[in-house]
Length: 106
Image 1: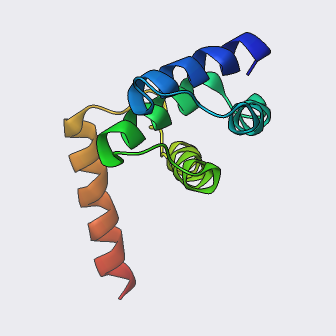
Image 2: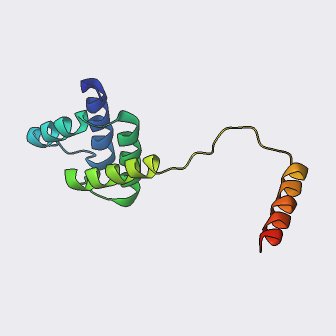
């Protein structure tokens, strides 16, 4: 995430949780440094999720846990193999042949 992306995300967070109050500069600096190491789109999704769950600004540790869980979920996603598949009739025929050969080997 770039410096501008982190600022944009912090602005969004301040609009969601700190309506009408000022956020301490130290808090903003800590969050800014923490956000720079993250991916912008995933971090924005985490902010949206946390806004639904939390009524108050989350701790950095809470945000990191949510972010890590989202990253793990994406990494463990199983994607289908793109290849040519045999028609159904051919598969049924092959299954019959395999069953027949298994019975013969008993």
